[in-house]
Image (cartoon, rainbow, N blue to C red):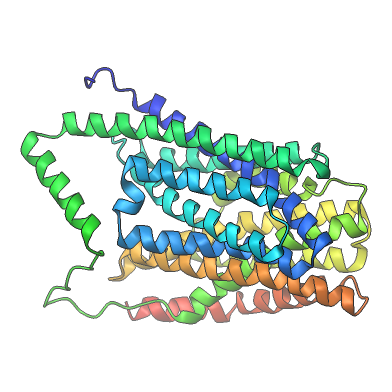
Length: 420
């Protein structure tokens, strides 16, 4: 294959289409399997499925970071995608709650191993702007989610086997598209590099694949880098702990209290809000002070969303309004926290990649704890016969964090920057 025959745009869109198909499959099955498991077993077991998926992703990300061959070889990436698809398909035939949770971990493991490889091959498309590559990737994921949630709104609950068959087919297509694109990118990379450099690069990749990654020793003259306080990272974990609750809460709440709307309705509405408002809203924050104000607004949106469920959770319109307000919380909070992390890295000796990895780790911990807590709180609310108890606890927690994000969290950040 010659350089002229290589089309970076075509190969990037192969990846985007594959990701969109897989995202549609994930969005299609998630609300349905959570609501069915909650109905047949309990909210806690339903939450264990989402917990297992996130746990598997964390494990996969860890393994992929330390053993690159598991995540970067084209066959490994496609194999991990297929692992996720097969594990999900098997869930349609499982009748024990613990087995569903176990296969959810396997699916998450495949996802956690394949996603770093996907990003690695996108970065190899040097002819394309990296910022545009990842913004289009995020857009493809969101479009896939919206499509999957919309399809889920029209799929009858009793056809879960057909749902998971579609999921399997979408992941097979994703794996094939990725394999075609990755092989083309590797051939192009080999032709673009001089033979000596290509040989050195290959040798380095083989060495990295055999031994865990080690950070290079610091220079003797370097000062000790200043790190962000743990409480700052914990505030991020708490936000996502609260924000993920409705993934469980809505899936369990809707069939029981507002069955007149499909269980996936809040999710496709939320995804549409994020697609249309993420970029316009993010552009309005320029100064560091603006970003801290956006963090506070993000927690404020969570509070309003949960308060709506407390006072009017038995009305379908309140559930829909709650989902929309909740998604605005993510629109305000997520990008601003990313910017604050990047600005701290640029003004200190901290490595940006390490800080971002820490952020993803704490975010994952927050979503794992939040997903499991969502099921436990729902069961608790049913046991005490107070359907709004879980939403009330979330509203109070969000209100408390909104206060901290006005003064305490910015003070932690400023103190760390002053000593950078």
